[in-house]
Length: 324
Ligand code: ASP
Image (cartoon, rainbow, N blue to C red; front, side, top):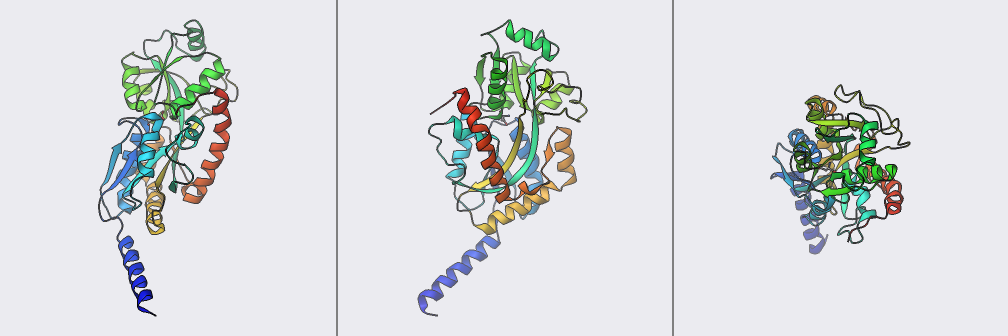
């Protein structure tokens, strides 16, 4: 071996040794929505168990809300690819490319896909003072208040935006959308009666529905849910919006170029978390289902995201909604 090869070999083995110690400082999960919302809740619950597989390093949650989740995703796309900054995002990874003319990242090229966490249904909820008590009454109220209904969402590209868009299309009614940095603050305003209705993940709505703080009208999945607080809710499909089907998923991503040793460790920590009885129980109580199929692997999750982009892109483009 010549001296150049020796130096290279030494550098490579030093790099491998460095990654073997990963993580040697706290890991930050960027949540691209405000604190207190469903993505934030999943991240905080996940962070607690994830650390067990990450040398017990603290897992810090950083909320970077705004622009439907694209600001937080852009931040992670540009972060150092060392596994100390990762992204917990949702279906917005697949819908943003169709919504933004100038998305500051390429979903399929600028991230390492670590794996999927859970699937979460959405619920259609309204302020407690709405005169409607079921979906049929809500529909009548919406039709007689055309142009006046305020629909909260977390910005263009958010799950609540996608669901609200499909809802307006299905009813052929346009509503005034009120964007927030996440559905955490949107829920605060719904509770306060400043907005009328919202679609949101069950991870954010179940407790409010249980406590009678919001009115719940339907679930967005093709089948009714088994979670006790939600089991009575009809599906939008059976309520007359045939074929309505929106299920949200959450997943972990690292910046492109993060070494495989690091993404492998993150993936192993994720798999450990998804088998954690307490985490599974907490998710189930909020209507979420922890992933138990091969989408927990980065490569399989990436194929799933490609299919989701192909599925949602045409529907979103047909709705003619764009942002720069
Ligand atoms: N549920 C939100 C959404 O509409 C995001 C959040 O606040 O977690 O995408």
